Image (cartoon, rainbow, N blue to C red; front, side, top):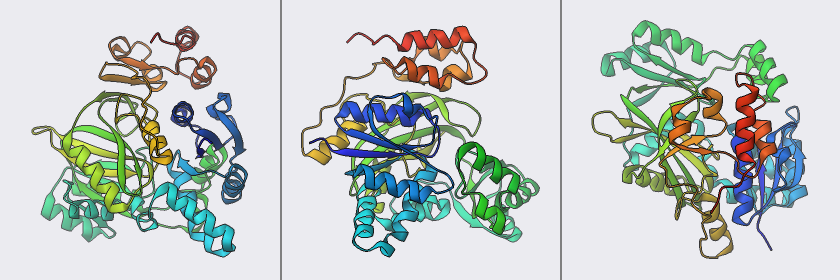
Length: 407
């Protein structure tokens, strides 16, 4: 009998659909909880579908768990992970059924001791440093004098980050004390009600509404700026053991703090070691991501962040120990790892639809491997229903996706 996965997502992100396809190909039976009009609707690989409701997320999540009876839950975004953490904390109220759900979440995400630290940037980096991982100097800040103390000891430039924010929206590069003090006030401020309402209505993400009404301030950290290039790792773990990993250098992004659109596959022993140490220290299970900066002069990696969820590259199958779904399937079934066919020998990966939406004439699309959803033209069409791309360009990519590449 196939192991069954419940894929949970609150955002209409394309990578979640790509991961569902990869999990299905690896041998899993896939169920999914997602908001209406998600690209997951286009996939035959999803056997059972459940609708996510932003007004009642715990109820929707509980129904999906009971209905699908999964062996494992995979989170597709940060809010989904926060929902799972919240459900875990509430499970004691529901007797034997609650205990079953609690065990399932721990089996899926890892030890609950790591749940809180996953979103606390400064404590996480302190933990990483204790584990022998290179990290930039980082401290939590609250008052103006905290920033002044940082400036006197470390100087500028520096990077300021707000906990609990994603997609680069809670990040500021600051080059002076005056700018840092302004950023501290902005990042710590509770979200405006207008912004909270907009996110709730458009994304069904209601997490900002309560902090907005209660005027709850965010935790903020300041971090030494590492001059260099961004890098990222996608990993899959089971009970603290790293099963497989992908390491990339970021070549292109949608914006300075936005998601990557072009990556270069790399081998980096220090990034691999950091992934193994974090997995063991936090006893991680499931899919996670780690972000790094590669120092300009030396190429040495500095760990800067943990993403406690599947990232946008988790579906890529790039050979032995570089196929995350296959490694997870083998760990759950006890069978040998049978990685899918390697997608490409090209080290440059253009993520779909990110790079063709960023620039349909991008040089990377001509020289790199374009990660189209081959054999899924309807998924490609759903991904390209966005502004900023011509009808002719869209049809070109849809036609390309409709043809399966030769072996």
